[in-house]
Length: 432
Ligand code: AMP
Ligand code: GLY
Image 1 (cartoon, rainbow, N blue to C red):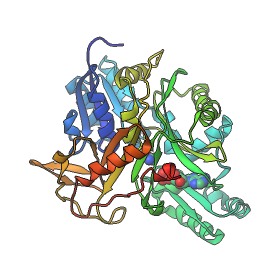
Image 2 (image 1 turned 120 degrees about the vertical axis):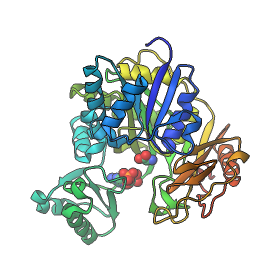
Image 3 (image 1 turned 180 degrees about the vertical axis):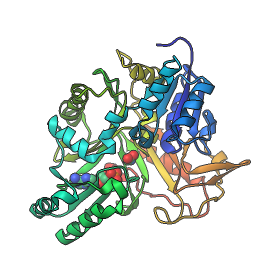
Image 4 (image 1 turned 135 degrees about the vertical axis):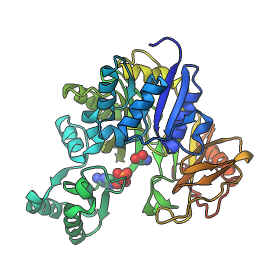
């Protein structure tokens, strides 16, 4: 561990980064905290820096000029593009050592290439849906694989597609047509390869692991997100309309299976393949009749899950991140708040389709609960909307029902033109 305080640069601008910055700002170890580019709320926890996380020259310059000790990657894009490798190289050229939370390009392929992720899972016997990777070269084999599956059919662009690369269709003809379109470039180079998967039926949850690349790991509070725009999980997919933690079905028996069949084989698999993975691993899991299966890996925290996970981490996150970046988690404990947390996301009217921006947000001074900004920006003294997902209210309470009640009460104090939020976040888990 370093002596004294640590200057940190957190990359990203969403609700997830608001929640991480909030948590970091509470630590006595935190020195200067910069969020790049941040949003209209993150300046309450640190200083916003106007730079793009994928602009490595700008990130490196900030690191050097501002005396940054630790960089934390909030979103996947810079990691998949090689942020860690590049920053490490440049810091070494200056003769300094930089702590980085987030894997190098090799580990980030777990999210950057769904084909790589599926092959990795096969190599290490990690439970996941049966699959075949299609390209223009094996189209006949791909069609035969589809024909042998039952409806519905799951097709995924291999590469990053801004969260839109997964298409699920009901008929075989639609599946053939979707495959053709994807291979023809529907998602650009990201869908030059398409992973076809067997459909798995069950409830999903998100498990987050912090690992140091040397076998040390901690499991963070388990969460569930709500992806569809409409109540009762209807309508279009979104970046996430709310979240809850804990997840009652992710009990000790289920989590023991997750640890033995998924977490440990993943961490040991990375080490066996020579991948020095230091950062967050997000396991998107599905509970199929009590058996956990992996839907996807992400190489960062989830959004909006982080908005409920951070408030439930009882201990200081900074020493844990520092130890992860140094490759030695040792016996650092994180602790878990026993209370439940619920996050309700307010979005702009029209989202996930077209929506207006620049709407004045009112009532922010009327709530003393936790509000994590996402698509907001400051215009002088006012805060206005600047994205689809605008902000989340988050509450902690003794149980999920009370947490939801409080998060909704907080939300009722906030308004902007066209505000919309789901009224049923967490209700599927508590309905009798
Ligand atoms: P995304 O977050 O865009 O990757 O969304 C992927 C979503 O598609 C997952 O959260 C699941 O809801 C769904 N999904 C992906 N793969 C499967 C599968 N094999 N079986 C069932 N649902 C799936
Ligand atoms: N909430 C899902 C994700 O962050 O990908």
